[in-house]
Image (cartoon, rainbow, N blue to C red; front, side, top):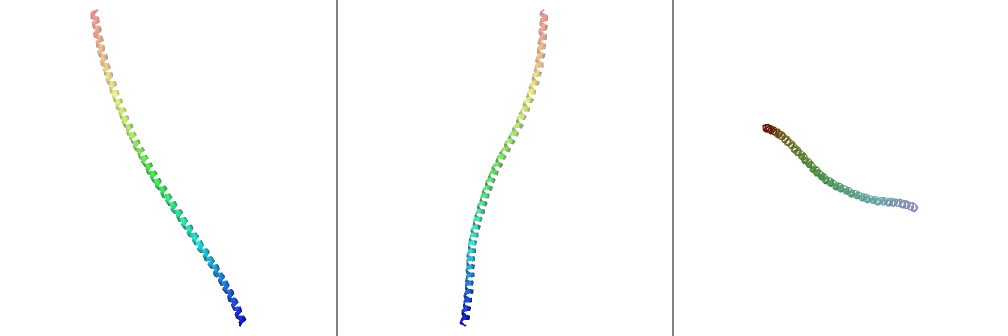
Length: 137
């Protein structure tokens, strides 16, 4: 009976040792998994921070682009206003040119008429002079 009990005790000790070894192995695996969880959480936090930083940078770049676009639109509007002003100026200058041309034509007509009148007066004067010279002779 003693031998049988010693054998049974040895078997139980072996089973207990094996059980303790498996338990230790599992505890080691748990510790390893806990470490892995901590590392993954750290990686996750780092990834979140990088995403937030990227989002903030994109927001800043978008704000800058919006400001640049507003500025560009303002410059474009200013240039369109300047173009419209220059077009108006061109129309005014063309109108002034046409008015000047019409005035020149009117002056030329008036001068031609005056020249004809002066020629008629000169002819008449020459005729009277000739008549007087004939009387004198």
